[in-house]
Image 1 (cartoon, helix red, strand yellow):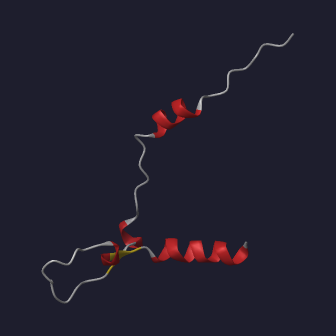
Image 2 (tube, helix red, strand yellow):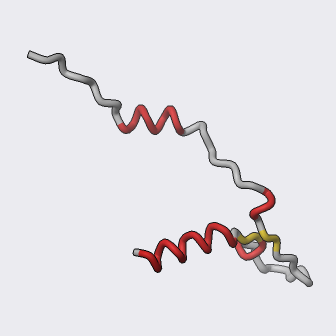
Length: 64
């Protein structure tokens, strides 16, 4: 009989990798400057853009 190998549990792997955060390259971020600050309007995702990530997603969608 062969010895049973223990596969890593998904929860244990997730805990180990939880501290690792993928850092973004500051040169790949496009900043959209607002002309005026409007009271009561929330600032959101539109201030920063990731053109490289968006282009990669689009090309992946076209190829598949």
